[in-house]
Image 1: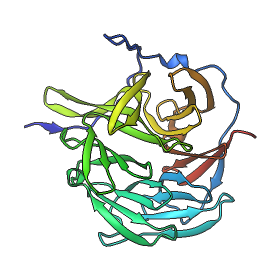
Image 2: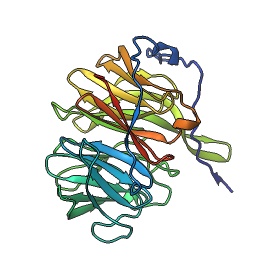
Image 3: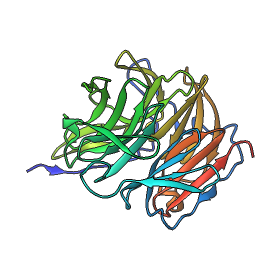
Length: 310
């Protein structure tokens, strides 16, 4: 009988591709490092296990995995609102995993149920959509993003037929546009273009199968298709993207740093870097707003702030 085994393996070795592309090495991203450190931005006893976050114009939205709700803070660190609770009803969450915001709604994706709920900016439930393929206990939703017209969802799963990148249009028609890709999104704040960074790859070996840290690359979503732009190092584990003008900011969970690239894949600089060791093992989500990086720490129940102009 086949055993279900999920590996999150960070492969630290030099990798060459058989085709024309060749992945860069981790040592490529070591120059122009800025000497900035993270500081504690939010330390709130109400915040039990912060996960995914989104930095809107005036509000920082934070999913609390333990409280099964969304906390809303201003950029002075003051709590403005919270919405949601444990449950399967309207405005309730089972396993809230990903959040994004556009000009119309706040979107929250529930893991293992395939449900995405829409809220107004006061946190009031408006409606929901359901993606049948994502209604499974094996599904892990990694990210969600909106371009104002379509919603995009990235999911990993032990079932190869469920994992990938999904597009949900205005008619609530679901299309699977990436069948092997598992990663995170980023939206160009000026053009609303959606970008995708692959972090994991599916594998089958002997009696084991699942997904693991592997080939990483950056792609642009155009006309409902993923169009690859450039490779990242093997095992880079991109966890979140932020795009502004002609620069792409990528948070690497493996390296615990934020690197900047141009659209051709040329490395520009590293804005923030710390050791990917025990004290940072809970840091896995990033949001950016007005030259400030926000990071959530699920282990220590903190939100960090990295001011790039300080």
